[in-house]
Length: 309
Length: 277
Image (cartoon, rainbow over all chains, first blue to last red):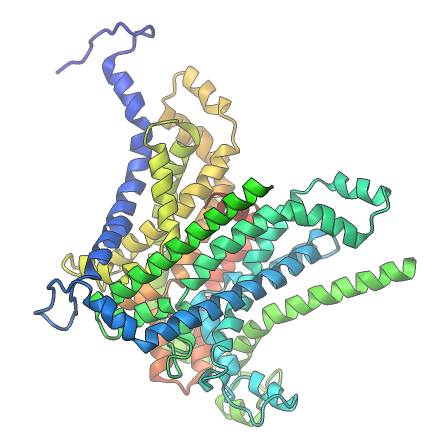
């Protein structure tokens, strides 16, 4: 079939050619979009439906619709309520420490000095360490058999005898948090450094000529310029870290006595160890709703601030 | 005044040094235990360097364990994922950078959505979907999952690199008779080589580090990736610290190599990602 219909279009392009031009962007994007829909969007919808069904891998008779049963069980599940609290603690402490230490590092690296390239490569190295390995590495450092940390703490008098903080219910959460801070400082530092380097240098010179000291320059130039990057990085990182279960799975597996269990690791434990996909999906749905609420609050807060400002 | 400046400089260098020490110490300890002979491990305690070193843990891990296979599996999965993602993301990123079309808004929204929700939600449904297709316990299945997870961020990253290249270049080529795809392949792609290298590096490291989906989808040693193999080794032989840390050092090598290659582009690349994704 030949398609050589001349067209009344001012450019006199054949129909096929025009069709090709309309379709072109879709041809470029189709492979990525199809894959994302098949491997992320479809499972997301399926997962939401699992939350209302009884799906246990080891029970071939499961699969039926159970309505809100999982959610009623969740409301009474002490491990889940504890996990909610632990998630706040884990996320808050990790983000705060990563941000403060990352910002300080970015400020230290902002001005050129001899050996800056090398120093930068070395301090950013933890970011390249695979998360499972940084979890194991820190678990070993906290282990009194091969790690130095318990012995140092004992020598400083902070610990009665060398013991593993990961098996102490009151201290265990600090293990994954410290590993997470070590691993995540470079991310904040890199982002802040990029924002710092985008600040026009002549602003500082002008301020210095006007007699502003270093601290004043930081308050009235650096901070206002960094604020948008800080806000967006903290917000995105908060969501990301609250979902980040790798370190906890590797270091404590949620223990001792669920004291380090966060919601994300609880979902994984339910799905992976108990193979209870229905219950895991119900927890996941609750987490999704909480994250949505968080994002909405941020959007509202931002609008309120814009209106005031 | 000069004295104060000198003091500030020294404080600055000391602070940098403190960061470097903290950043490197855990990795140093990993290396130290991996070369410490077993008989010295317990007797010498927290000494910074053992009085004699050995490569026996490395040779054990390389010869008598499954780690070479885990390593190979991880290289196949991470390398395959990185290459496929970079191709898909270049195409999609180019379209987002150069065309205005009706569905663009929805495609960007879809990709942003995938960055927002917790991936751990998908562990159960993806297992249920892949298992009847025979894609659990298979490297192919893992690659498919990892490609989908990494494509959105990589697309935004590639888009930001294409945005930095003037449109006139391919327009000139198209006036000379090249199709757009030819112009894209022969003119634009070579100019984005640094961006392509950065994307390859980011995706390779991300796939190399992925743990949860690998744990869920892979059982047994045959198709285990490095993290899965290392974790099962740790839970089985949890007293052979030297061997575990030797394996850990091996897991570190590819990630560090890629890091050294791409670290020049880090500041540039992550800003693009942070602003858009």
